[in-house]
Every structure is written in structure tokens, then in C-alpha cells.
Length: 386
Picture 1: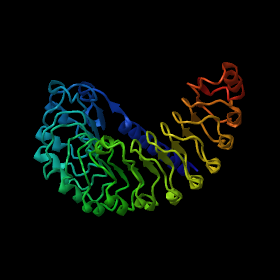
Picture 2 (picture 1 turned 45 degrees about the vertical axis):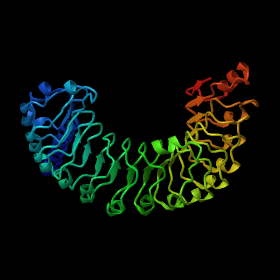
Picture 3 (picture 1 turned 180 degrees about the horizontal axis):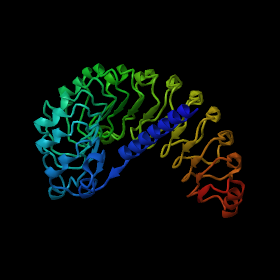
Picture 4 (picture 1 turned 180 degrees about the vertical axis):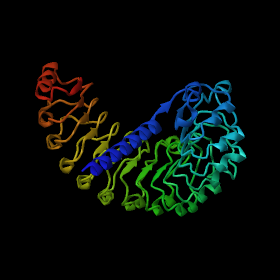
């Protein structure tokens, strides 16, 4: 019995030590001075908005650092990094590095020593020239190259065979190379806000994609008289869980949207969509549907089959009455259908007992009494904007 008690106590203390170490590893320090008091116990250092023009050598005492964030003010070189010291390569345990918003022009040769790095954010460093050292970091899983004025994808990027997420938004890309298909682990691709006129065909060949974003592309905006058709290959990406096609001048949605059976989030805001296919009701796993600022006058009844929908935005359209099908969307926690010429009252909304946020502003044809009566029927915790 005594032996069993000792074993239990020993196990308890081991768990206690393990928990204490986990807490220590998850603690974030927000100044170099604070971190240097016990350098070997520091794993996370966040120097966001510290306006550092250089990194002090004393930081190398943080030998166990796994997470480092040094963001700057990219519009002011005196308040941001313009270069990285060679000793950055000494942080061989780093798995997360955020250098966004600086003015770093080139990465040091020692950068290739960060072999454990999984997450790298280089966003808003202009102009940044890429060297081969970056493409040797084959453990990278997330890479943010947004807002770097890139007009052509660097060839070395195809060495990053473990890459799962790639952010190329806010650049000057006109197309994507076929070699992108070699990134077999790629699940998240963002190419919004580039200079593309249409979605590159190669996207349809990346069957591993779970998240895809394409919107607000400058060339498309310049030719607003020409509506964009969503290519059929998009409906063939059957692993998609999130699709963003905002501000693309889309006017129609194909019935083939029903092929995306795994879809959880669909963002189609800021387009010219004037009707929805009945098949949209087949997206049984959909949780978010964003249709703000389109030209919809009505919604198909089949949309009422989306019982997993929790967020529905259809503001700034042309609805003249509250759709009856809304009463069937009983799991909604957010509903926004403000800025529509609604006339007929809010009866269907009274059935939504899980609502936490309701936005019904700019319904000028609805009297205040109707709005107040609706509020009385809702969950007391629901925030109503009217």
C-alpha cells in the first residue's frame, strides 16, 4: 500500500511539473528587458508595435525562443527594421516568426539555419528581395508573402513541400504557374487583391485546397461592365471548406455549387448576384453565408434547409419582405439584413431563439413599434441594431 501511495505521489508531481512547464512555454513576454531577467525560461516574445529600428544582440540569450514577433511601421523606416542581423540564425528552436510591417530589404544568409520554422510572416516588407536561403526552410507550413509588390511567384517557393497555407494577397500577380500543383500539402491559398482578370486555371488542379480566396482583383475592377463567370473547376474542388469570391463582379452562381458538400463558409459579398440556385440548399455543412451588397430580390425556399447555418448576412440587397424561410434557420446566431426596402414586418425572425446579433437598420418602411415588438420576442441576450 505504501509503495502504491509513493507511486501515485510521484506520478502526481510529474504531472505538476509537466503542467508548470507547459504554462511557462505558453507565457508571452512583451519586452526584451522583461525577457532577459530569466532568459532560459522565455519561449514567446512579442515585440509588436515597439517601433524597433534594430534588434539588440542581447536577445540571443533567449536560447529557447520558439515564437518571435517583431512588427514595425512600414511607412516609416525609422520605426521599423530595414535589415536582419546574422545572429537571427542562432534561434534554432524558432517555429513561429512574424516580421510583418517592416522595411526589410533582404534576408541574411543565416536565415537558412531556422530549420524548425513552421510559420513565417513577411507581409508588408517592401521592397524585399528573395534569396535562396528562404527556400531552404523546408519545414515551413504557413508563409505570408502579402503586400510585397510581387509580380511573379519566386521559383524557390516550390521547394517548400510541407507548405499548407500560402498568402499572396495584395500583390501584382497576373497569373499563377503550373508548378503550384507540386505543393501537394497546400490547403489554404489567398490570391485576393492582385492584378488577375480571372481565376487561374491551375487552381482547379490543386485538389488539396480547403480554403480559397479570390476577390477585389484590380484588373477586374477596371472592367466592371464585364461580369465574371465562376469557372466550373471551382465547383470541382470538393475538399473546400471556405470559399471567398468577394467583389468579383459576379452576377450568377451555378447549380454546381452543390458539389461543394464540405463547404462551411461562403463569402459572395460585393457582387451583382441577382438570383441564387435552388441547389444552394444542398450545402448541409454551411455555417456562414455572406451575400451583402448584391442585387437579390428574393431567396429560394431551399435555403431554409441549411440547418447548420449560424451566420447569415444579406444586407444591402433588394428584399421587400422578410423571407419566410428564415424561420427555419433555427441555429442562426447572427442575422444581418439591414438596408433592404423591407415592408412586411418581421414575423419569421421571432422563431430564432438562438440569435445573439440582429441587424435591421435602414428599414425605413417599418414602424418603430414593429421593431420593438420583435425585440420582445427574442432571446434577452440578443443585441439588436435598428
